[in-house]
Image 1: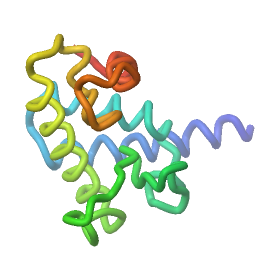
Image 2: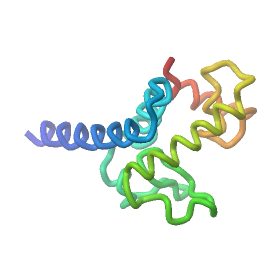
Image 3: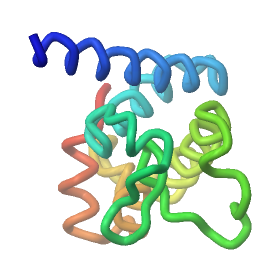
Length: 129
């Protein structure tokens, strides 16, 4: 029984994350990428999505964003606001790594650098065509 409750709980969080993404972009490919990032970064855990539990380096939200000074006050207010910051980070990574094969273009998102071997590996895991 507890497994069913856990699955329903995670599906609710997933639905809320995906609804937030849908509200901030109409671009289907970016939507799929943000859905995938949220899944791989937080597993659609509600405590992570609502910033009650942070990542090991202080990452916040379902998209595990390290807050920049310019983003102070934007994260952890609404899920849509979090999705908007994640979209901005995604677009930054896609632009910065445009010279790489598509599977590696999330390297800036994952590790802050297009040339990061670890960033490229993590990008491949999160990438969806």
